[in-house]
Image 1 (cartoon, rainbow, N blue to C red):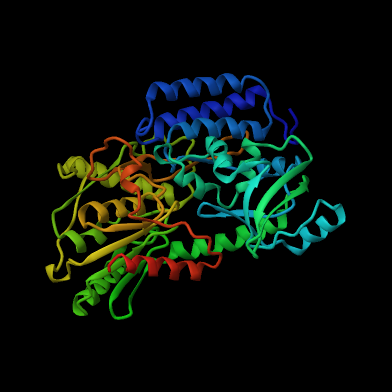
Image 2 (cartoon, rainbow, N blue to C red):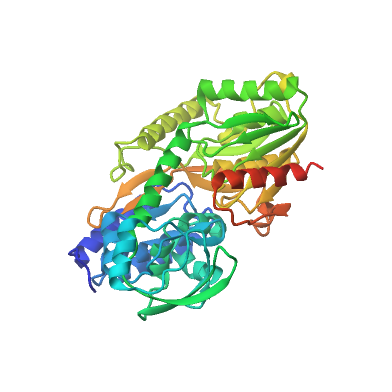
Amino acid sequence: MSSMYVTTVSKQQEDYNVFSTVLTQKEGVIDLHSDKDSIQYYLKDLKSKLNSEKSLLEQFKLYSIVIEKLHGGHTKIMANNKVKTEWLRERNSLPFDMYLIGRHLVVGELADEDQEALDEKGAGPYWMEPGSEIISIDDRTVPEMMLEMGKYISSDEGSMDFKYYQASQMFDFYRHLALPFDKDSIPVKFISLQNDTIEAVYKTGSAPVHSMNNRLVMLSGEYYASEQNHGKFKILRNKYGYFRFKSFTSSNGADYEYFLEQAFKKLSERKINKLVVDLRGNTGGVMQYSFMKYLVGKGVNLGKYIIEKPNTRKNRKYVNKINIHYLRHTLMSYQQKKKMERGSFNEGIQETESLDTNLIYKGKIVVITDEGTFSSAAILACHLKTLSKAKIIGRPAGGSFYAGNAGTLLVKLPQSGFLIAINPNTFYSHLEREGDPGAIKQPDLYLSPLIIESSDRDQFYFKKAISLFE
């Protein structure tokens, strides 16, 4: 074991006890997508493995494996700076930045600091321009690598879709967890911007940390901005309605209700009967029961939403209480309790509310989904497909069309400092689960283009969406 951070068996067991306690007390329906006996076996196995000293990176891997077995994408472990530092100290990376666009592994911009370090060390021929597509690393294709990496990444129902999304910006980190290089020269096959297929050998060494950080900071800003925005609506070419929802985090309240009302009023007044709902990269937030009332009218059953593990004095000991998630959980627990006392809870069943029936949209709908369409966004795609006969284009949604645990609470393990996302709420769509849970998510038109610029991708998907109306 090599680690710059001191670890002992007693510290590891203390972390384990917190983890297993919180998972039992606060995870909504722990066996929602997996078998309870199997979960107990994996927990017992984890406890046993933590009876010998492990590095932080090894501990992270062990927790990741157990969490993945829950098959719930909301429940996850997040790599802290100590784990990332331990990974970087092993200097077992390739000398270029890489990230996923959908299912494509592409080369990122190399920061000046990383280019200078590369020139000094002579790590190999750097002729991969930003935007080049990597086909294989060490003779493993991207799907082959992802199968191994996926053992450490949580997803709904165990599907690979959301795993691609979760690995997209930290591809090399998860590659190192699953497939650490065991030699100092690695063959890489890629497609250049001139569309030539090239294979070159690169020396392993320090990861291009400045390049990764630049990319992650930029994406973090974009993600934060999308969380503050409740969505956009346009009428394009005087023929098509277009909703673009990058997040549903802020998609509720009076302002959002007004936004929806005005959007559907425009659709009605201008007699638009072709509607595109773009949910790419939308990892969810608030359930979109209000949106659906404009499509199906009042009194339609959309499924259930239940606080399975309400906040109590007994089960909140280890939960981080200084954040909006905990406050929301406390409020929702109180509201559910009051509904139960009044006899109005109705097992958590959610029905669409009343509205001006003149605003109910009755035209055609195309929904765009991809690996990042998750949680409430995936359930909206499900509702649109099954209740409004919408067609789906793109790639299968990362989230379940049936059920999930949500309502993320954060737990920090006391010794390792790992952050664990635990989910006390459980939602269900109106569907009964049967057969392959991924079958219902398959698009009517599968699309997986490699388009670097997001604005160009938006145009591509919109054009493909409206082609289905014809």
